[in-house]
Image (cartoon, rainbow, N blue to C red; front, side):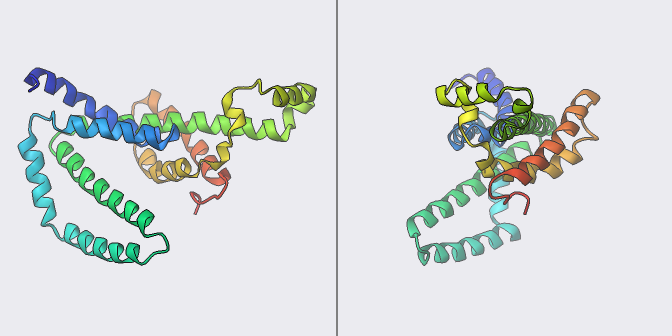
Length: 229
């Protein structure tokens, strides 16, 4: 058993991990899975576990949960009758795991206002940074491929040389415009980012405000444009 002091310290890390978990999808689903896996372990370091489990038990008897269970039964039937049952069942099970995990997270932050604020603030700031960085890289890649500015500056030969020698950094050789999953996540987080403008301090407010055009840009210019829909 871990000492109580160590458990308390580990429990304080959880809000930050939850905050960066969704934006970490930009690196890859595996990274997001690792972050959520560590978060699951840290849930059991919470000193008030009785309240957390009590909240989860009460949630299972709520009308919303009963409705979700009915929906999951229909989804299970639909998965069994789909073209690829195994893949459909995998997504069905993943949905159940995420719902249960969300209940525990909600129970963890239900009475911890400070931790909840930290988690939201971390998520908003990390999302803004991801949007700005990815947006800048996408703009750079678009200009690189189209040779718009570089050719005007007589860098056309340098472009051809860099492509032949693979001398540019890795992001120039991967298609950032296929990051549709990240675009969908960013556009879903956009309302939270907008509503958080009032709560954030002035220095972070400018960061968040500047990320909004990049989120829209990413949603509009990813390959399938599914995020824009």
